[in-house]
Amino acid sequence: MRELDGYSPLWSPPLLVINLARRQDRLNTFDAAAARANWFPSRCRIPAVDGAALPASMSPQLISDGRYAAAVHRTRQHISTPKGVNLTMGSVGLYFSHALAWRHIVDRGLTAALIAEDDIVHYSPDFMAHLRRLPPPNDCWDYIQLQSCHRGKRDLEGVGSSVNTKSRLLNASACCMGLYVMSNSGARRALQAVFPIRKEGQLDGRRESLRSKCRGFRFDPPIAQQAGDLQDSDAQIFPRRTLAAVGSTQYTRTHKVQDCPGLPANTTNPDYLSSKLVRQPHMAPPGVATPKRLGAWRFTPSSWKRGRGKSREHT
Image (cartoon, rainbow, N blue to C red; front, top):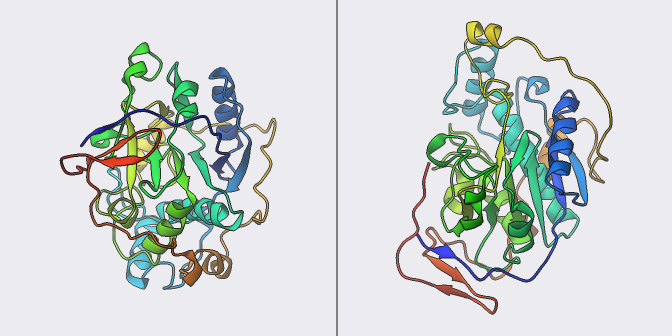
């Protein structure tokens, strides 16, 4: 695992924010936190797929019958999944939500875009400096995580302190996909790799298709981080007694980020999801092979050079 240095000239990818219609509170908090970080990107909202509203059956082109049946059973019987190992209807919805963002990148012909979940509220003091020096899209990376949970934790080291002035860009992915930049070719590859969902793990799992078949990099330490109670989750199922202790949240509507063009307000229709997300021949990135393993890379302003050593992934 090597550090990437010699960042690129300035470029400014747009921001796609994934947000459930019933969670306007998160969107309000997200906007306020971005403003505190002096981050005012060109942005639009990806209407998230609400797992709670998904039907009892789903096209096998999107997810295998057995996996989805297990997710439905787990959700309706309220079987606890606190470690995020097993699929739930909520985590299936999260898969679809991120995939709609990838498809938006492809459909709109974007070179790349930042994709954020709506609970990102912590930013390092030099967040904007790192953002301005992101390496431009090329054939050596598919996505770069600005936020991650190294070893399964929401590591706040460096977020909100000066230590992140030494944050490095490494060729190793990690769990959590709260904020990342995805290239156009990466979006195409991700759509091909992820569907149909055949494995039990959730989107950011180490052995799942996104991390095993796409070329991921991450900032270490992260330059942004999620917040809020870990149990305020639509993807995980927690014991009822724990949820009772957390209590309920009052949601208020104050303002709304404009929805991304071309996406309906209700994204839970299986036919619509199949038409948007199922593999299409033209999604394959032209002339780019998908390596099973990415070696260590070092970025220079003129080229990407392969360094010594092997890539290592962390959970």
